[in-house]
Length: 279
Image (cartoon, rainbow, N blue to C red):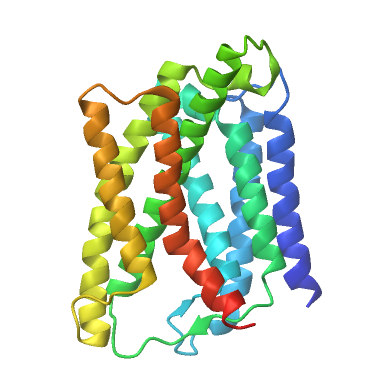
């Protein structure tokens, strides 16, 4: 029991250390300390996931669907993708992405805290039928979609904060350390385009999973409807951006709306089933 509490607390401490360091004015977001803190935060989240899922290995339960585990998976996926893209996007966009660290780490710290607080809620399910590889494939794609959308939303928030500071003629502060408006715009739409492509694949694998497990092609539930709405909204955003009429704070607001729909479909549905219905 003590271990199940100490490990999440250690993971939270690692995330907090990364956040506090990224808030330093002179923080080197490409140095060894940045990567070590990021690696420690990611390792802490993965350790929590392993601790929570280990008791169910070999019991026939195919997936731990609890809200707490979903949140820890989400945090780990965002950190892992953030690290991967920071190294792979090249010097300009990679640096711009790393400058999102204060916003991203703060948000993920909040998610992890909610994950710790909800650790006592139920949610372990056994799927009827044989899902084969469709279930882990669909879950992996869903996590990748959520991580891409999270990074896009954080980039959109950075654009919003930058433009607001510019409009109010505020110098210094957090906004000054965020990416430029141009780089933030480029980041949010590149990430949003990737999220749209992966979400499309996720919808397809979701249909295949419903067919294999439940024997029907479409299961009209809240998660499916919200995911489809997010897919359509992101597609519209990308179309408007391609035509040159969507930039800056207007785009950021709509990106955040699309992210809200995805969050409701992935985490919000779990909150309703694990918390509200259980209560």
